[in-house]
Amino acid sequence: MDRLDAFHTFVTVAEAGGFSAAARKLRLSPAAVTRSVAALEAELGVQLFRRTTRVVALTEEGSRFLVSARRILADTEASMAGVREMDTALR
Image 1 (cartoon, rainbow, N blue to C red):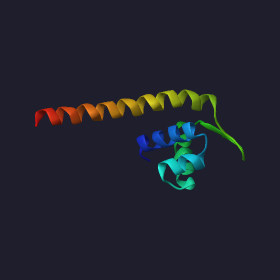
Image 2 (cartoon, rainbow, N blue to C red):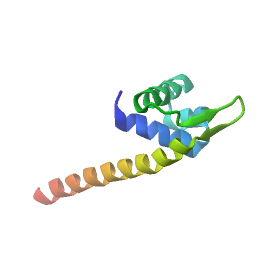
Image 3 (cartoon, one colour):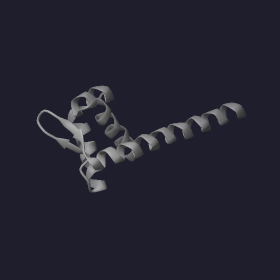
Image 4 (cartoon, rainbow, N blue to C red):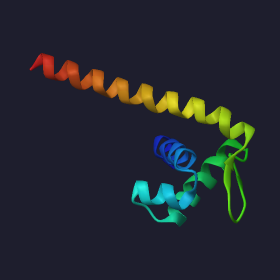
C-alpha cells in the first residue's frame, strides 16, 4: 500500500462525506476506495470511520488522524514544489 495514496484517499472520503463521493472525485471504484481505507485502518489498528447504511462519520481517532494526514500531504506537496523550483532555477 502506498501510504501517501492511502492518506489522500482517506482525506478525500472525509471531505466528500462518503466512499462513493470520494470514489467519483478520485476516479476510482467505490470498492478500491473502501479497500484503501480498510488497509489503512488495519495498518493503524483503529477504525477511522463509523459506517452505517446511510452515514459515514469520522471516529475520534479519525478526526485526529485527519489533521495529521492533511499536514503530511501539504508538507509533501510543498517539498516537491520546492525541489521543482530549485531545478528550474538551476537551469
